[in-house]
Length: 297
Image 1: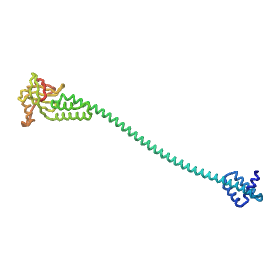
Image 2 (image 1 turned 90 degrees about the horizontal axis):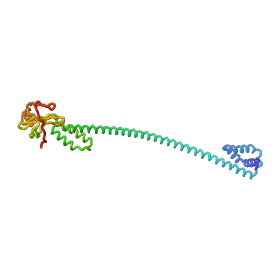
Image 3 (image 1 turned 90 degrees about the vertical axis):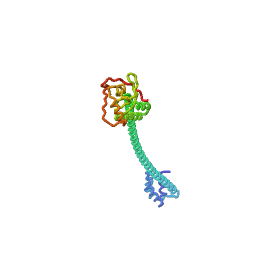
Image 4 (image 1 turned 120 degrees about the horizontal axis):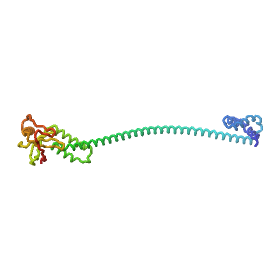
């Protein structure tokens, strides 16, 4: 169909008042440039050809216009749907961005917490290493202290020697350092107690001639001692030497002060001032002879 015939059918279709109103509405709402041009042409030609209309032409033009209206409505619906989808997508993007931001904040907090945990762990590891070093140093010091105690033991008075020997023999080499320290402190405490008092003991000594003599011993702390037989015929002194505790017979020492001091300590006599010779550097004022000691049975 030629363009003039199409235009004629459009003019015939829109010769009625109702269709003219629809044409005006379509023109106003349509965004299709070609359709608007066609409608504009109808508006211009309509006054010239209103008499050349037939029922068939009106129906054809009406169908054509209805198709254009349907297409316009579909296009409008598509635009509306697209706008709604665009808004929905924008909302989804906004939600995703907000969720991403929230996740980022959570990750940052977790990183800070992890960093704090790492710092605390490193701090604890450093403290543990320091404690281990201190423990190793303490173990070495305790071992050195115990070794010093073992070196001192032979130079102690015999009663203290026996006590120390029993405690050292009962101490296992595999014992914990804390147990070794407690044992060493216990022995040193016993030495301090012995050093601050007068002590008595009995022992059998052997003279240079090989004669065994039973004597009573008086200790002044842990560095000086005197002994005398019951009848006063044998006297002497005791002192620590480089080789250990040493007993020496010395008949120049008067037995009376020794026996008197022993009687006072045993509360068999009244207290009085007594003078006893002091041993200096392992020497006495009179010739002496070394004595071999025998443990009290």
